[in-house]
Length: 192
Image (cartoon, rainbow, N blue to C red; front, side):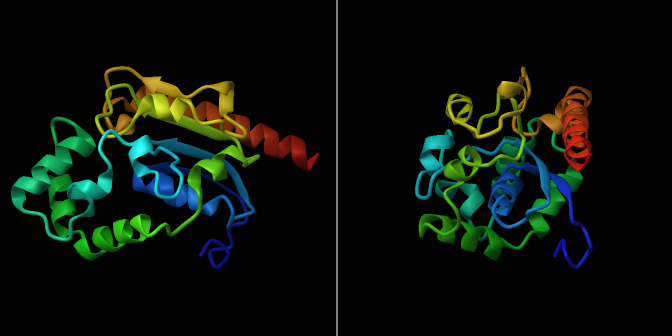
């Protein structure tokens, strides 16, 4: 798809499931200049329990059909409080078959070994998580041996849950801005 759009270089930001998709792209997109992960433990095949406080496939994330109560619980886990009505509505409209198939594939071992992918990648990786994220294990994420961890550490925004870009936008954006500038400088130096 990126080739069709004539995009030859890009830094990717992936949140939660989007982070897992971005990790999958490490081996598929040679033009990746940087990767930002938030709310995304890079897990081995079959190792979801290692990186998550409660494996997503065991709960609402993997269900095809969600009741109004389920959507409320899922939204609060994902976004914290308060949850904007448009977010609940977007969750209601989402196609549950996608959730169901995604987690069936994960249980079957589909995809790359994501931990090995980030450990072996030369692409600069920024990790930014909320310090009170109820879904992920921060100690697991910080214990991954990233091949090129930006600033040599995982960034944790204290008092923020699974959506740090939402509840601490200024702090999150400042870190992202510094990372993108570092990636841009590295790209310019590599072209000279």
